[in-house]
Image (cartoon, rainbow, N blue to C red; front, side, top):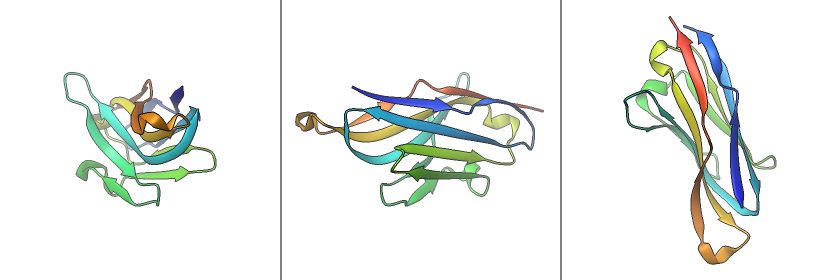
Amino acid sequence: QVQLVESGGGLVQDGGSLRLSCVASGRIFSLDAMAWYRQAPRKQRELVASISSAGSTNYVDSAKGRFSISRDNDKKTVYLQMNTLKPEDTAVYYCNARILGTDMSFGYQYYWGQGTQVTVSS
């Protein structure tokens, strides 16, 4: 089994910062691309930022210049540093990863974490 566990969410004021972490564990042979998504109430889940195994990054326009995604392959962890947070950033943030398990017969699969709530007060 493979698990993704997020942490670091919470309540912060407008303009504040938070750092989210997501640790992958279990029967992992290879950890490929990792990403952060978010879902606000009554809205569709959207991609916030992604990072390839080589470290290439991509951001949604609203996150550019404020958020930074990074990873530590030895720790099987992906981070999302969020600065200058705005009320519209309020959402549940989900970690996503493309993983090849030790049972390679299933090939690469995408896994999701359980989500962590980020609330930005005005």
